[in-house]
Image (cartoon, rainbow over all chains, first blue to last red; front, side, top):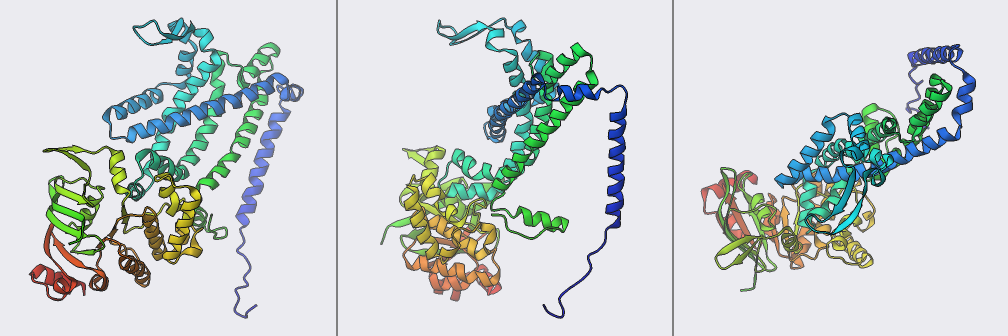
Length: 295
Length: 254
């Protein structure tokens, strides 16, 4: 230890403590007011919290979210590349798709896919003007309400995510493309190995948002009678008339799911942040944390 | 006379109504080093980028090792090449950029072996062995697992040179390779380039480093406003320039 080492008392932050106490106090009062309300029956909340019907609904909600999000992400990359392509037809088709699915309410799209059987009673997949038929059947059998719901959520989400992916691709320095070209790499390879891995840094945070929106939007599938969490909760409350209690139960599980499903985002950000000094840049901006190089 | 590696014949290039190259003809023999000098905006970087068809050209022809770049000639008709064919032509031409353009999400060795494995389908073990040897050759064997952000500018540029060499090019293009470097880092990059020239690599170098031009170049070409003003040995062009514009430029740089 040297004589001129800086040994200083750290700066005090009294307002952090005062505001912290205030926040906790307000929160406690709010929870108490809810809990003490005579119109909320705590017994029913506890009784239905781990009800198998509710739990099944929660599992289906996760499945719908993950499947829809996977389909949406793949479509989004395709749409983003189409929109950035020099081919005017591809550009137009992608813009029209995005415009249509962003321009109409999600609820309307869900009902449309749910009612597909009324518009087209039977579906046939084959080669036009020939007798070759691959699939033929009742629409309601080929596209059950679950599939209709997933299609609706995925197509809508693809339109939003496409713009996120496009922004990510545009964020990558143009010199990367040139360097890849000069090494003899072709377009698709460059996109897959050079551009997208770098774009992911920009894509992941807003996609985390989209993932959580998607999880909550699954509740809209109630209108086409998909037995996800919200549908299950409303079905139970239609019988026992404990609407508020079952909303609390459903809300609890939505909160648990969004919290748990946010965890992988941090892992993904770490994975695609490799080579970029994200930690250093962020820490400098806010002036805290150790400087370190992420690797 | 040995074989021509690069043969450019009255190359013209316009960006909109702005004609940047107004008919550039020059050639480089195999194993020779050509240094392109000229004020900024003279078109030297654009010309370099035309050689590997990063820029399309509006007139003239460019042949690299006998192959017409970017087009296929059938009789009197020129056909644009497909992207795959252009990519195949570029594999034999290495390029080093002013801003390095290393892939930031890959380590030094991953940068070097990406194209040999992904494009040439070389097996990973051989590619890695060759890649390590190349990193040793540019003096960075111990930095193989560093990301570009962990390397200095000079080190990044040397990795970029190793990355280009990994494709075993027959021609190397250098686009102001030391212009973005701190002065004390310029020497290490020029040293690598000097060794490369000594080993017989055919090179075209756009640079403002007069010392390098004098020492390494077989031919120095001075360009201004999209035209070749004067070309010759370093002694001729640098020490005894014939044109006023060349004289003015060399005086301003020295």
